[in-house]
Amino acid sequence: MKLITAIIQPDRLDHVREALIQADITRITVSRVTGHGRQEDIELYRGQKIAPNLIPKIRLDIAVNNEFVDITVDTIIDAASHSGGEIGDGKIFITALEECIRIRTKERGGKAI
Image (spheres, rainbow, N blue to C red):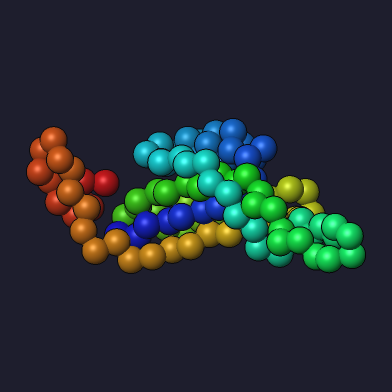
């Protein structure tokens, strides 16, 4: 089991959600977050650099069984990137998911996902 965390631009959320649904991945968690990476918004005020502003982003958390990792990642990459790719299109993190428990049924592991 893996936890896939994707940080994408807000205007790509609908594209990514529709693409994930088409790929039969329907269980996702969406959060609105702020941050910056290379897509910095450096401003000068009276000749001094001001810390970059935090830019609104969308965070997707998707728990998947191992056989769905590549499908999920490829789908997000295709749907989240702007034509030609741009700085700020986002990042995807894949982490091992030690355990998953469905509270209602007490199922554990891949069945709970």
